[in-house]
Image: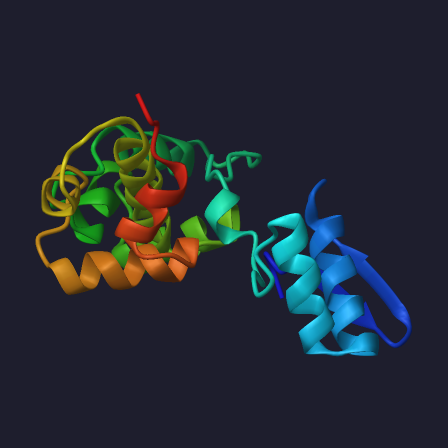
Amino acid sequence: MEGDIISENGRIYSSGGANSLWNLLLYLLEKYAGRDLAIQAAKFFAIDLDRKSQSPFTIFTGQKRHNDQDILMIQQYIENNYALKTTIDELAGMTSTSRRSLERRFKNATNNTVVAYLQRVRIEAAKSILELSRKNVNEVMYEVGYSDVKAFRDVFKKITGLTPIEYRSKYASRN
């Protein structure tokens, strides 16, 4: 699965990310020597034993390696105006295409739906604000274009694997 730290295919094991080797070692230790020993090793080396995903570390930059100029324009618009309540019909109007055509072209060009792309842009902005400011979660939520706390929290957790508060406690600047 995308973002997984450890891949296993038969007797072949792999880990993603430079420090994911530690997660692979703990995984193998747990698999072949038992959970108790794996927990002891995790504590000794101060490693998060049950981290299964690299999602919190993902930095979304948009998929722009395509040649659809209209879609590039829409991506740029979304990235510059993510906090606005823009509808897909309004975005389609910017390219003089139908909603259905825009959605199809956007998905073909970026591998994301328009809504998923907007969510990822908004959550990337929220991550940055949580890391660099002391704004509370509601302020961050409004600043990036959400007005429903549950929706914001659910999308944030789906994309990062953490709640906004958990994310801030792990990655916020201590200054």
